[in-house]
Structures are given as C-alpha cells and as structure tokens.
Length: 180
Image (cartoon, rainbow, N blue to C red; front, side, top):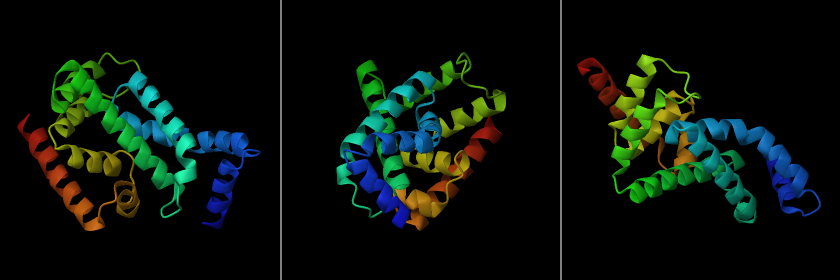
C-alpha cells in the first residue's frame, strides 16, 4: 500500500504526473478495456468509454482519498462510465436498457472483435435477461474472475449481497440456457 501512496503522489505532482499517468495507462488499460467490454459489448463503444474513464481518472485523481485501492477506484469509475453510457444510448434511441442490450447482442455476431461462438452468444443473451446489478456481478465474477472482496470495494456492496446476487444470476442463466 505504501508503493501505491507514492504512485498517487507521482500522479499528483506536476513534474512526475505525465510519466506516472503513462505507467497507469500501461498497467490498467487492458484490464479496464476488458471490464468495460463485458458491460457495453461493442468494441468502438468500449474504446470511447475507456477514454472517458481515463479522462475522469486523470482529472479526479486529486479526489482519490486512498480509502480503497487505486485499482478499485478506477474500476468504479469505469463501471459508472459504462452504465451511464448505456443509459444515455438507450435514452437517445428511445428504448429501454434491456432493449438496447438485446440490440447490441444481436450485432455481436457481425462484430469483428467478437471471437465467441454460438454458446458464448447464447450466454450473453441469457445474461441480458438479468437485472442490471445481477448482470454486473455475474460478469465481474464469471468473465473477469474478480474475488468478492474486490467486487465489494468496486461496487460498495457487502460480500454477502454479492454472493447472493451471483448465485441468483447463475441459477437464472442456467434456467434460461436449459429452456432455450
């Protein structure tokens, strides 16, 4: 944790912040891309949300209090940016978040950046039937293999509630897959 505090100080210091931010990008660009991609599903949209995430991180690093890990704080920003992006996109198109997600999943097959097969497409369709919170928890646990403690820091939710959400989501997905 001491190293992280020193790193945050480098991000705050005008003399060292450019190099520190390059290091931050190098460390977190790929995991944040994967996290956002799991939420928004589309490559181009993911790039936009990722860029907005790093802009927010850069402009708000002075507000980072160190109550959580830097990683958790950045994941929270990325999650909020992705969810806000999807809500705004749905509103702009005059459809619900669920309809937007179904529309995006239907486009996945033609997305050159999606390397999944029919089973993975079916899994995404099953996940899209879940409430937003269950989707988020399931994706973070299943695709990103995050520990409940990490998710707890990112989502500011108890480990018990996350375990319950994941269990319920997994059961709903299993039921969906067995009925389709």
